[in-house]
Length: 325
Ligand code: BDP
Image (cartoon, rainbow, N blue to C red):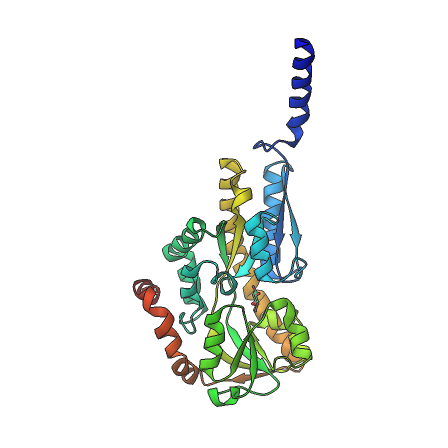
């Protein structure tokens, strides 16, 4: 009887081994992005995966679900929160409703230019913000930043000044700050997922949207509306986050490895981004898209109420952002 029990216990513990949550187990890290293969953000995360695979002799591998296979960014964030997905690369715009601290980056005309934004995310403020996300109740570990360029309005007609937006329904990312920003700019902001936008443009549910040149190109929105007005109202960094549920199961060494390669991915995406922006602009122009200069100071002035409303609680941080040179 005793022998029998012992034997059974041994057999079950042996059986349990390959399926346990031990630190040395194999793991497939699922990553998701709304963008297609070849997009800088997708490539940088795939390369992070290749490094992990090499350095752990295949124990850790990464599988990329690109092109909105797992839905829009709201859905991707939710899946990472419950551990159905490990890495979500999303716009800070989409994460703002989950981690309010991030909304400081979601205000219009907060960064002087892209170089300024990069200095902020690469420096102490960037690190503090990643830590804030990880320490929040969002159940996400923030690994790194990416460049999301400058967002400009696109529609069937030029938008050079606030009056041009009158009566236009313009899709914005799902965050109240953006809808209010578009309303302040003179249009009617409509919150909608990126995954719904192409058909919304086609069916005139919205008249236009706003984004950087690589997204305008790769999401094929330029096939529907062909005027790209350089309003430059938003420069929003992007972020990639890791599911905390899964993170807590990783060994300290694996966590450190992920953090190290995340910083490298942040820098690699930057190089790819610089190239992609130039290529996208050329392709858009070749496809007949009209690039139009806009009265940025007028849009800056029109959006002052948004900075006043949302910026008050970030006064100290905003000063540090402005002082970053
Ligand atoms: C793109 C961002 C992506 C957002 C998208 C959007 O890279 O993360 O989902 O804009 O507008 O520029 O939703």
